Amino acid sequence: MFVTKNLYQNDEMWKKTPLGNSGETIGGWGCLLTSVTMMLNGIGYNETPVTVNEKMKKAGGFQGAFFIPSVLPYIWPNCAYRDMQPCETSPAPIAQIDAALAAGKPVILQVDWNKQVGIQTHFVLVKEKKGNDYIIYDPYKYGGDGPDKDVLLTSRYKFNGAKLESEISAVLWFDCYSNTLPEPPKVTKVDVPAEKFIIYSTVDDVALRAEPSVTGYLWKRMLLGTELVSLEEKSQARSKVGVQGQWLQVQDPSGVQGYIAAWFVSENKEKPAPATASTSTPAPAPAPRPGTAPTAPKPAPVPPGAIALIPTEEISFRSKPVVSPDTLIRRIPVTEQLISIEPSKQVIAKVGVKNQWVKVRDAKKKEGYVAAWYVKYAGGSTASTAPVSAGTGKVKTTVEAVSLRKEPIVSDATLIKRVPLNYEFIITEPGGESKIGANDKWIKVKDATHEGYVAAWFVAR
Image 1 (cartoon, rainbow, N blue to C red):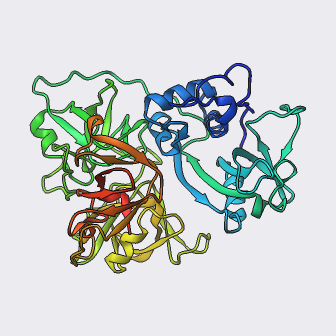
Image 2: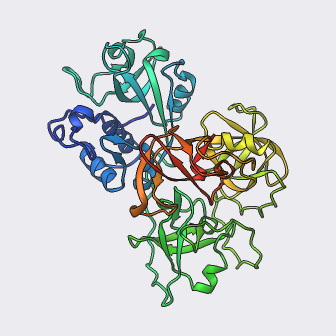
Image 3: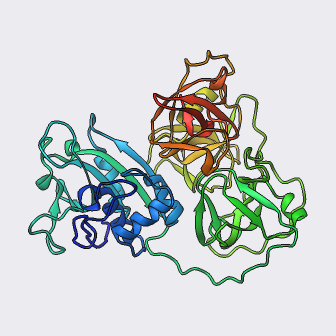
C-alpha cells in the first residue's frame, strides 16, 4: 500500500494556474503533475500542485505542458525516477506493479479516460490492490469523490475491456530512499580556500552528501556540468579528481556544502576525467558506523574489448537474470566496478534499458547478472569501429529529457531542446557510431527540425 493524501487537479485553489510553460491549465491537463505531487507527499515532502509546478519550471522540468519526470530527483532527492514502461500493445506488468505496492513504493499509471478511439491519456496514482483491481488516488475529482470513498481503476476507467492488463497503457516506476525523510545533520560551514579550485560533475544525477560515504545524508542530486568549488586545498583536491573510492568536500553554486564522489568530477567541463584507481596512499579513513557500506574494492583493469560498468545505486547481483530470492548472490554498492563478459556491442545496446540484463564479473571475480537499467558506462571498449557513412546511422535516447545542443558543451546557451526517452536521431558525422555509449564523447545528429550534438552516453542503437 502507498499512503498519501488525495489532491485534485481541478481544485478551485489552482485549477486555473498555467501548467508548466504553456497556455494549458492544471485543472485541464495537470493529472501527471498532481499525481506526482501526491507521490512526493507520500515520501515525506509537503507540496501542492502549484509548488511542484513552480519548482519544475525553474529546474527545466517542462517542455511546454509536457512534464519531464526525470527532473524530479534534482529537486526532491528522496525521489528516484526509474522508467516509463509503455504497454498499449501488450498486457500491463501486473505482477511487478503488485510487488512494488507490496513494498510500499509509488506507482503512477496511464489510463484511457474516455471511450473515443485511441488512448485519451490520464494519469493516476495507485494506493493498493483490492481483489483483481486497484484502489487509486485519482487526481481528477468527480461528483461524489472524497477521502472516505475508494475509487477502483476498472470501475472508473473501463473503455478497453475493464481489466487491469488492458486498461493500463503505461507504468511510471518510482522509488524512494526512505519512506520518511531523515533529519538533516547539523553541519558547520567551511570557508572556501583562498586559491579557488573549480571542478565539474561529469554525469547526471550525481549525489552531494553530508558525509564522504554512499550512506551519507543526501543533500541533493546535480546535473552533468554543475560547477563546484573545492573546499579542500587545491593540491589535495587535484590528487583525488577522477579517482575511484575518493571523496571531495565541495560547495555547489547555491552555497550548499557537502561531499561528492571524486570519480564523478573533472577539471574540464567539456571532457570528464577517466575514473582511475588511487595510486597514492590515502589518509586513514574514519571507523565506519554500523550499517555503512564497506570500502570499495580497487577497480580492476578493463580487459581489451570489455566494458566497465558501475551501478547507479546499490543493486542486486544474481545467478540468473530473474528477480527471485533464490537468484540473489549479494548486493553491489555504487562504488564497485563491474566488467561485462558479453560482447561489447551487445552490452552497449542494453545499458540503461528497462528489462534487460547484463552478464558481468564482480570485484571478487564471481560471474552473475545485473539489471541493465541500474548500471552506467564507466570505461573500456565502447562500440564497433567499423566506419559508417554520414547520415545513415540512427540512435535512440536511453533516458528522458536528453539535451540536443548547438555545441558539445553543457551550458544553457547551447541547449536547443530536450527530447523524451526512445527519441530517434540520425547520425550526421562519419564514424559517429563508434562513439555510442562512450562517457566522454558527443555525436553530431539531426532530427526532422534541428541538427546538433547529443551526449553519446545517453544514446544507443
